[in-house]
Image (cartoon, rainbow, N blue to C red; front, side):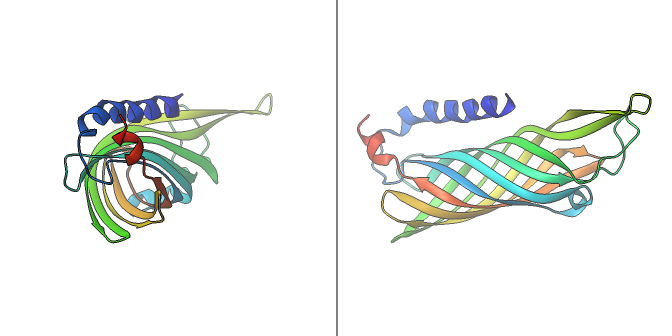
Length: 209
């Protein structure tokens, strides 16, 4: 459900911006993007999270005739979760469990195209949820009840990427730094997502609108 809400929010941002950029003549007016990779916990975050895999989906919407673009993105990071202290009302800590993020970032970026290559940077902010597991143990019935705790937080994210044009799409590599304004396990959430993927160029379709 959270993924659907964040994805719909990103698509809404894209729809609201499409009309305003349809009159520009730049060749990179509209990209969709999808990538896979890892999100590397840094600082205190490495005390309780270990990287597993990450996926991201988003849109690049060109603004004006220069290199500026709007960049809404949904980040789905999976981590191995080693709980340090039990949550309130729980006795046991979980080890080698799994945590997942559902985070939406709205960024402003700038792209410079050089022949088949493009270089870009971006910065923005957003928020979402990080799900962390909980386990309640009933020693009488010998049953374990699993639940997920939703940790809401705001984020700031800045990063850069490189693209290579292969015709109707760009291959890309992107790295960023993500800072969370709330704590998990009484520690700050900081991570470095690194993704590779593809950005289909939908500018020709947009020109027909």
